[in-house]
Amino acid sequence: MKNNMATNITLNFKPKQITKRLLAVLPTRARDVVSCRFGLGDNPERMTLESIGKKYGITRERVRQIENYAIGNIRKAEQFGKEKPSFDDLEKMIHKLGGIVSEEVLLNHIAKEKSIQNHTSFLLVLGDPFKREKEDDEFHHRWYVDKSLSEKVHESLRKLYKNIGDDDLIPEAEIVASFLEHVKDVSEQYKNEEIAKRWLSISKNIGKNPLGEWGKTSSSNINAKGVRDYAFLVIRRHGSPIHFKEVAKAIEKLFGRKAHVATTHNELIKDKRFVLVGRGLYALTEWGYVAGVVKDVIRYVLAKNGPLTKEQIIEKVLKERYVKENTILVNLQNPKYFKRDKDGRYTAVPQPEK
Image (cartoon, rainbow, N blue to C red; front, side, top):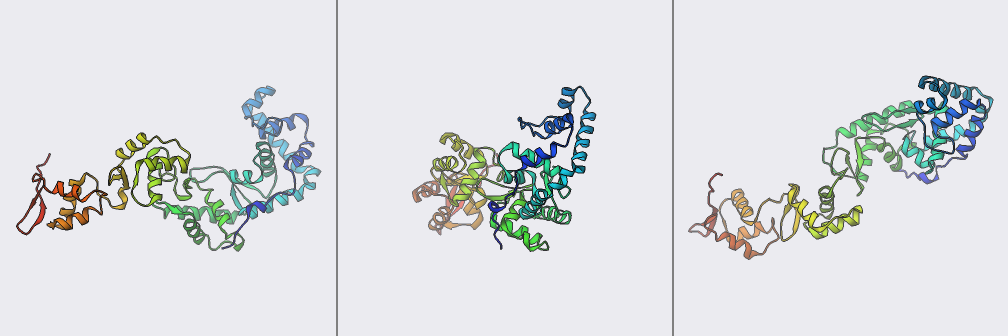
């Protein structure tokens, strides 16, 4: 797989200088309306049609007409033709970024400063090669310069989403490889990890959690919202039972979230995703651990395997719980729950229905 260094993809012009020359062809009011609409002045905050209308004592529709007139006039001006090399440069950048790229990623790549981003947005609106797709239920705002490629990426993102389980957590390398399989018929220039990740960022339904794992954005595994969700990711990453005090520490370390030890313990107790398997030790239910206290685990083991000897029970229970052997033996001696036959094997005593 090719590697693409996004840091090397830069513009050879300064957006503010280009827009300044282009705005100079407009009458004063038209220039001011466009500047307000796109945040091109000293204040980078964009003004609404309504607020601009109030400023000039005109209707929203009249503001829109002035805006459209201004853009049309700039495109017809001689100066616009002179700036073609800069528009070509911007087009090349979008191609290098993947041919289709989310608006946020594109603008953040060009500059972190809001003012420069606004000037770039204005140039994108003016330039003929650049097409903008508005945000919808599936995708974020995005720009493209190749309609055919754009359609392939959109369709591939839809197919990828359908193949992801509701609570799947997928390593980045794996989801990138899977996605590139869906877009294998696109140009070789786009087949690299960085571009694949940019295309993935277009989707509103597929996302990445703070640990770099991918899945559906509707899943709490991706959009963690509280201690329970962060605890799940911590224990899953740890891969084996872990004490609740360590879970709290890991939440603070990995996510930068304050997690009180007592609060963390209480949240683990309440959530069925977690199982207490020892003194303060928690595992994930999805790992196959049985819920309940030691006697419940013994009953589960007997129900699953039939009568067992003391040694067999100890062996199987220790796979479910981090407890002392004596704790298991003490529970086995309770005649209310267990009985031993003449062969020395134990069975569970049926319990009355509650």
